[in-house]
Length: 351
Ligand SMILES: [Zn+2]
Picture 1 (tube, rainbow, N blue to C red):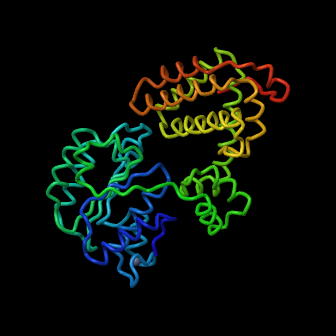
Picture 2: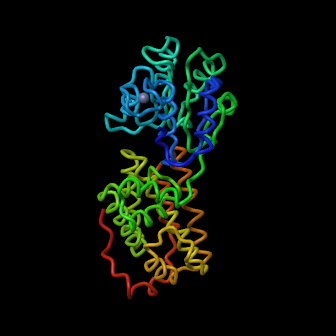
Picture 3: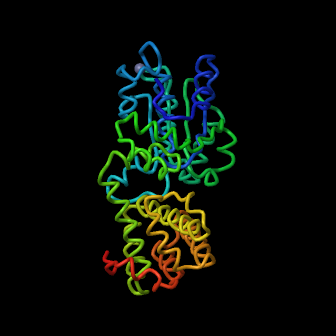
C-alpha cells in the first residue's frame, strides 16, 4: 500500500512505470515543505525493493527498514542528514562529500534489494561542486539505480540537473483530503478541521501539529510573540531581531517557519482589512486580526508583507540574518496602536 496522502495522479505515474518496467533513472519531485515528497519517495523505494506480495506491502522487512532509513540499498542525503547537523551546527549546503558517498554506492550493484535508490532531500542546497559531480552520473546512469531529487525551491537547482530528471510537481492537497487524512489517524473532528485549514494542503505539517500538543502550543506562543512585537518600541524590536538572528544560526528551519507564519498572519490581516475575512488561514485568530486590522492602513499592511518576503529571501540566500531581521523590524509599521490598546493588553516582549 502506498502511504502518501493524496497525489493520486503522481502515484499512478509511478505505478504504471513500475508495472511496465519503464522507470526513469532520475525524478525531480517539486512541492512545498511537508506536502508529501519524502513519503512518496520512500513509497517508490519500497515499491522497488519490497519482498512481499503486493509491493509496497509495508509489512516485509525491506519495507519496514526503508522507512526507518536502515535498508542498505536506500540512501537519503539532505541538509539534516549531514554530520554537522548532529554537532548542532546548521548546514547551508549539501557538500561534495555527501554526493561522492552516494556516487560510490551507486557504482556497486544492489546489496540485497532489486534497486539502489538515492533520495536527495533539499536538492536546491547541493553545492555547485556537488551538483556538477552528480550531473555526470545523471548523464550516464548505472543500471538498477534510481535518483529521487526533492525540492521546495526548484529555482535553486542547476537547469542542467533539472533537464536530466523527470519532473513531477506535487500540488498542495485539497483541505478535505488533509482533514480525512487526520481523521484516519484519530485526530478529533474539530481539531482536524482547524489544522487542515491551517496546513495549506500539507498533510505532513498538519500531522505534526495535530499529533503534538507541544507544537500546537508553540504555534500559539509564536502568535502571541508576534502581537507583543507589534505592541513594542524600537528597542524591544531590535532585541527581538537579535534573538531571532541568534536562533537562526542554530536552527534555520525554526526561524524560516516563524517568518512563514508571520507572512500568513499579515496576509490574513490584509484580507480582514479588505473585508474578506472568510478567506483567512488563521481563522482561529479572527478576533485578534480584526483588532489589529483597525490599526493599520492597507498600504502599511501590503508594504510590510513585501518587507517580509524580502527578509525571507535574504535568509534563504545566507545574508547576514541579524541585519536582515533588524531591517525588517525597522520597517514594521507602527500603525495607530490606540485602536488596539483597549483589547490587547500584552506584556512587553521578553526573549
Ligand atoms: Zn514490503
